[in-house]
Length: 189
Image (cartoon, rainbow, N blue to C red; front, side):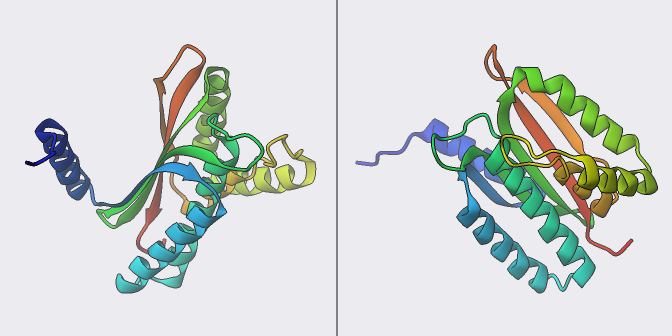
């Protein structure tokens, strides 16, 4: 006798088809730490080698993934006691000559307005303004209690030369799901 939940399997097939349609090749849900970061970057390096991407595209994609995965590790509200490990969703895909890194993790609902303001300001900035902001943050930025200096999103926006796409969804009264999408062009710009 089979022990399949046909509704669940049908949902998985629909999900798989949707991933294929959107070019998603890597999906991970779970805990984030240094080991996970190393595995994902190695998988991505293999894929970009097969795609014969330029060194610049590889470097930008690798750097963006490292920054994003470090943010997932450090800043997720689902932190585990005594170890630097966050929890969330990570997806990577390529469609229409661009790689897309998509993450989702829980954040304190109080952070929503601050994150929106920061990302909107970064998206509105010119490359020169981003460079100046990065240098200013290096000089004046403080290390947060979670070990961040506020450079990650600035650097991603600066190096990808693309706006950050984001959304917030309700999770609980105190928490929101924060979804971030980073686009890395698969051609030198």
